[in-house]
Image (cartoon, rainbow, N blue to C red; front, side, top):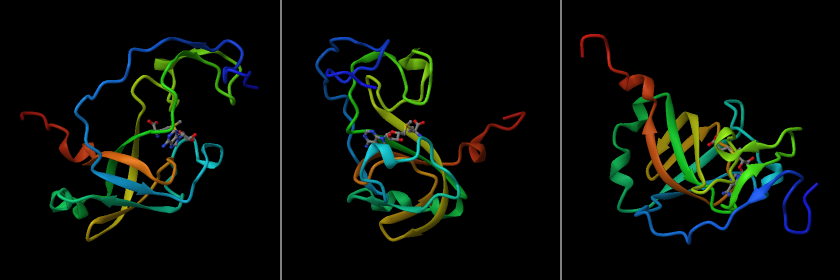
Length: 155
Ligand code: SAM
C-alpha cells in the first residue's frame, strides 16, 4: 500500500533535474478503452481490444506503406507518470527493484513501447491490437516490425 507521499515500502524518490525540452514532438494521440491506470493492462495483448492511433498533420503522409506490415512498434509518452523514483516496489511484486530493472511507466523519461498487431490503416488512423496505455496517451513514433529490417548475412 502507498503511504501519504505516494511511496510504497522500500521505494526511493530523488529530486530530478527540471525536465527540459528534448526536442520531441507528439505526432498523434492514442485512443484506448482505458481511462485509469488500474484498469489498463500491464502489457498489451494480441487478443486485446482494437485501439485507434490518430496521426496529426503534417505527419499523415508518413503512413504511406505502413499497411504492408503485420506488426508495428508503437512508442508513446506515458504522460501521467511520476518521474522521480529510482527504487520501486511494484504492487504485484514482493521485491523492491531499480527503475531500470522494470518496465514500470515510472521512469525519468516515461517512454512506453509496445509491439502491436496492425489491423488496418484508415486515412489518418492506424488500428492496432496489443496496447497498454491510457486513452489520450501522446504518440512519439511508429515503426514497422523490426524483423522486416534485420540485416541478412552478407549485407
Ligand atoms: N508496454 C510498455 C513498455 O513496456 O514500455 C508500457 C508498459 S507499462 C507497465 C503499462 C502501464 O503503464 C499500464 O498498466 C498503466 O498502469 C500505465 N500507463 C498507461 N498509460 C499511461 C500514461 N499515459 N501515463 C502514465 N501511466 C500510464
